[in-house]
Amino acid sequence: MFKVYVDGQEGTTGLQINERLEKHSNIEILKIDPDKRKDSSERQRILNEADVAFLCLPDVASKEAAAMTTNPNTRLIDASTAFRTDPDWVYGLPEMCKGQREKIRNAKRVSNPGCYPTGFVLLVRPLVEKSIVSSNYPFTCHAVSGYSGGGKKLIATYEAPGAPHNHLMARPYAFGLKHKHAPEMKIHGLLDRPPVFSPSVGNYYKGMIVMVPLLPYLCNVKNVTPAYLGDLYNEYYAGERFVTVMQVNDEALLDGGFLDPQGVNGTNLNQIFVYGHDDQIMLVSRLDNLGKGASGAAVQNMNLMLGFDEGLGLE
Image (cartoon, rainbow, N blue to C red; front, side, top):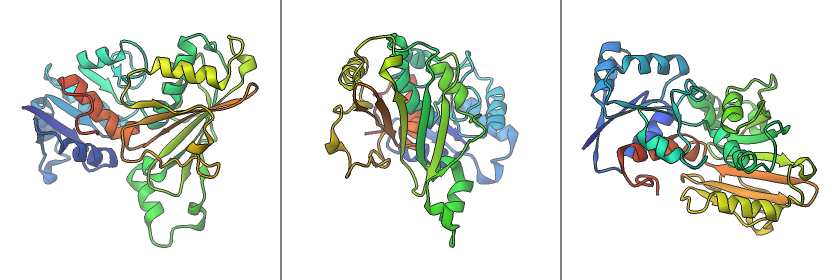
């Protein structure tokens, strides 16, 4: 029986992790007295008692919690952006490349990927690894997420009685082009520079699509077509349980021409779509921003680290 602790269990990601952990029969979930949630000594005691601790905290608090964890047998999975580009932490995206799953299994410190970067990296990294594009390709990325991705404060804003009329629309943001996910997208996408990243928030709770345009005439390989990329992704992700490559250019997968960002909600899936023609191609990831984009990925990483079946609590 393994002991597991969620530090920050009242936040959106922490609550979702606890829901998934309840499906496990072979772990003991450590709890902290609500009156002691801000008691550093009590938090430190529980962190060091755990076999695995999830840090579902703001960046600064995650760094503090990691520093508190002195037991060499306690393994950490951090859900913040604090360690996603830190070489001393293993990036928790098992499907990213060959050997990544084994690194996670053996890791003491795992950084859980961001939701947008998960979709982006799964689309882009195979293209760079296989030399379809160079590392200096001028990538752009457009994405839309449910408002739960903004945490409790944004959820409360959208769900408050009499919410502003403009909240009914998709609202683009991050116009300063310094989104906190951009460094992660660059490093784990194997790029020389971050993409021009344009995210937006939709008027729905959860679900996400991440879109990356590709111009075949800028590729390193001639005759790059949607069918060619569909075959490449199918080969790259062969045997993966949580990355599914959809039929190329299949209009039947769309709802009257629209792609529903909520289509895989409640799962740990990342679906990959390829649409387009010989001159322009659109690559798309669809995922649940609270599933494969957050708590689902965290539990998947825990399963690997503790030697469980990878899909336990997720399927």
